[in-house]
Image: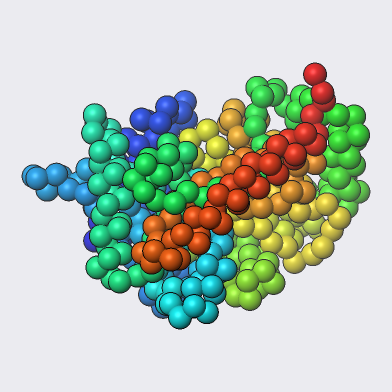
Length: 383
């Protein structure tokens, strides 16, 4: 990313978002900012040493002006992606093929939907997006890789990728939507009686009954001392979930230095000491919940710090939704509803391509049916 002009990249991001309808909030998608992607590389989090070799694509006009961009990495594993293709790799290698290396167009370690095919805000947007997809195919052929994957892309980009011959995949997350609530009580009033009582009980258990208080930190409040404490929490969770954490301590310093106005750190305090925390990012009309960790276990504290505090923040700041990360059907009982996510895939080998296409047809139907079934169990009062 150091080889890419930051102003040109971010100008494309702003143009891509405004073409998609824009937002009354001026902060861009945090994860696709040049500063965020650069921090991943410069901090040692996403580098060749961790299996993420930057291969970012730029689309230039005849005069050298950058009119399109696509984040891309050459990878020798499938970790940190959250769109799982381990089964594809195993099947291909059992059949004598070589699945790795592959190309991955995504934000490393970040299962959040956002624009991937960045293009200038002009009349040739779809044409330029198609050119980026063709460029991704060409890069794959040049490297002789098995495949190229664009994950957590927007639905319009996904539709366009399907027309360009990429195979289409769907998955599911749980997001919270702000129905013009005035406060958290207003949100609770929209829920069924049983769910409303359960959430009140969980909040009481997390805070009132345990002597825990909550601080929300952003901007100048995000000191190195606070980041040290949060990183201790992150290390604990990352070690248990993945064996080793994906992000380095330096990463958090770099993003705070570059974009502290988009970082919201929710920290839980007991007896004057922080014991748990979750990092969130603000962009457009959304609060993106990311990493969480703790050094003390308390009933319902995870729900409070990661879900209810995020809802509180979104209501107070008039944000349209909260995206609380990958998976987690337990979020349904806490006011989060199923949402479809989208990815597109180019497979070089004809036989593997046919097998995956057949699999994806069944998988898309399953995701749709599961989402419909879960929506029937949403916690809101029936009309």
